[in-house]
Length: 144
Image 1 (cartoon, rainbow, N blue to C red):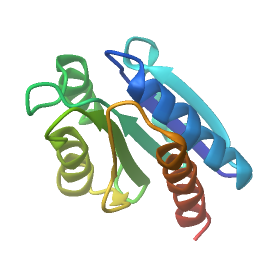
Image 2 (cartoon, rainbow, N blue to C red):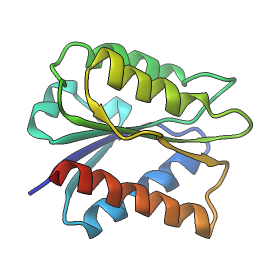
Image 3 (cartoon, rainbow, N blue to C red):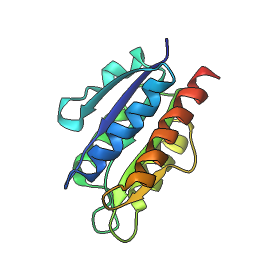
């Protein structure tokens, strides 16, 4: 069975709504999903998963500090060849998704899904469907 770990942080709840829809899409494709907020996640658990999915809003053209710190922790484990993906909400710019994607691709040498998923503010019905489709895409990539 495909195992996927989602690690995310949210400020206003929008990124968490995205996370729930991505998770739903993953489960539709038969993936076992464990999702944790950053404070509850442990990078040493990644070895038990086929894919790592990160979620963070953009705040003032940047990642929120908790995700930045978590990315430094991720450098401690070997993620080379694992599937990676990123998602996030944004108000006006949306850089966080690209930053997470680039880090997973170039620093951790993961096989990433590009582009990542960016949803402006609170996801509407169409946005939530895009989130589910992104989850399905992740599951399909892991299955090969």
